[in-house]
Length: 321
Image (cartoon, rainbow, N blue to C red):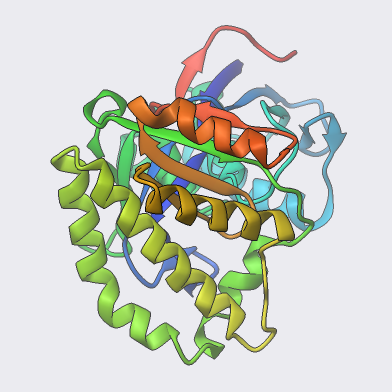
């Protein structure tokens, strides 16, 4: 059987940082994100009992080593559920190949899990599929359900995501600037406990999550932007003060931050948000989209993407092979 799924990457609004259980990929705290409609991953999965092993091609390249192991963690769990002894042929393509910290691991594993479960004719509820794709990337839980979503670290003994609001419920526009980096995200997650600031984050994160949830439900874009920016500084302060003193920002990142702060001082409602990487999301209201894009063009940035919130993962008919 063959199936294809499409999913959207996410912007972390209240970002998850660190894993309480690295094997099961269970985080220390709840987190909230929004899917990015302008970006996507499409993945086709086909069962093939004649292959000697799973064949996985991402963005035109056959993956091996740790990257393949991470994908096969999800595939093995689905195979066990379906009592399937064969192998998979997987082809996955991201709509954008450049930029780090844009949430494509989330969309990649969400599309993988949905397509593979469909190829195996599994009928899983959202929470169970969330718990499966979480084994590849924690944020895939939120990419799977789409819109504005919360990922629970522990809700009645389970760790999965639920949608807080649909893409149409919130008047948010994202101006996205992809910035290249070769840094591996997991390195930052593994180091959180070595930062003297992480304990403070754990004490305050519940109130941040609740404030963000309230802002989303009330369509309060200004509060969403302000809270996401505050959380950005909190997260990156932890990466910078861990044992490896990881600095994820590039010179372009700082130029954008300074320009956003300058715009806000001039009355343009704009707030920066940066996940685990150097790429920048600028959150604003739709009426100010052109102003923000114009200011980013003035910085001579190579790529500027405008997006509205996106929906959840879905099966599509256009297979990649």
